[in-house]
Length: 235
Image 1 (cartoon, rainbow, N blue to C red):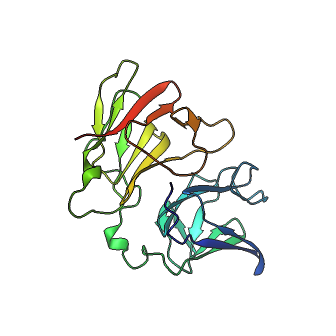
Image 2 (image 1 turned 135 degrees about the vertical axis):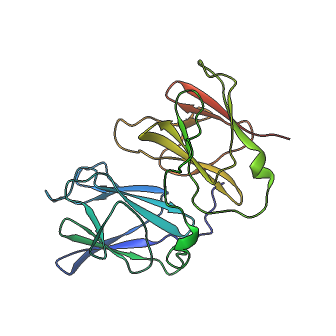
């Protein structure tokens, strides 16, 4: 029961001013790089194996460099993390990817967006793995979703809880986050951050979630490696 109402953006792929194709940003997490396991594969020695990552939330997309050798550029400027706006030109090696999305909001409301940025206060954590809370956009008022929590079911941290009051949280060891839970108006959605070969297979109620965002229901059980975490909406 995923929300398909938003219109995803796309990337027009070109080399030496010749258009080679386009990619629709129809997954919440997509990777760009030279290796075959990337969503967008660019076979060029100037491109790192896993060069950059795209995170799409609703109509908006964000670009992050993955410590690539030659860097990632937007409109000629090197970036680390960058909110994309319609018409932005991403340069990776000698290849260009033009971002096309008339409905993207981040270009007009960048001042209201916090892009995967560590906060100054200590990160929230629940046993192992560490949990980092990251806001993407401020929210007004309160809803039933503000009562949602995660509870660890096994291991040394069994019984510990994390209230899901943030717009987004990542689960995983510090610097190697594995999954992300995003709060949307219609619920919480979980998505893998690493879909490469050999990556940890996250499961919800025993089923692998793959690369798609999956809406969490009350009492769903999330499995990350051997760790089991329950999602629930408290009364």
